[in-house]
Image (tube, rainbow, N blue to C red; front, side, top):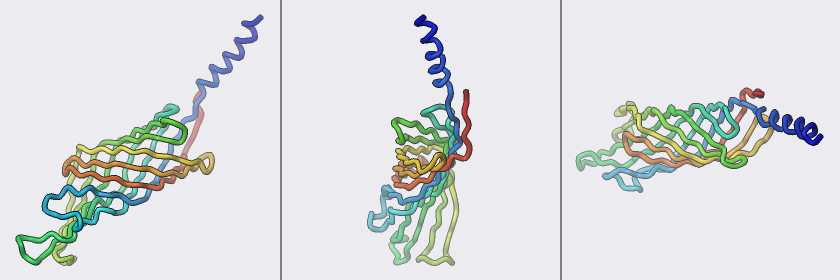
Length: 197
């Protein structure tokens, strides 16, 4: 008798446990970042280390806590204003921007709190001006392969599809040994959701 009562209950719990929701989510972020000066010939006061940062992440949620996808964005690493050339009075102004293309892995550790990790390829775009003149401007780019990012995100749901959150993100560029930390405000939208039984 007890078996006949418990069987449908256990079966219902097992079916509910197997049901789960899958989502594709787009997250856009904007904020400011801080570059840790690694120059040996430029003083801290001659480097603009606090500059804008933007991010984009498209992830698929294959399991309850795990999210896989890709991330990119635009990070303004630094801008220098006082580099002297061969002891002359001429000065160079240089800035560096980074566009990463990373494989992204996120894990929900507790409710609304996620840890984010990324690694992959990055395009480094630099601009150099002599005496801050556009006539004497040189622009180019280089590629870095040994890079990674790590961060922590907190989200507040605004609706069933929209989340608003904040993120602290660390970025390392291996080719130039550059370090960057940014604080971002994130807007997330679930593009598509479906249930798997």
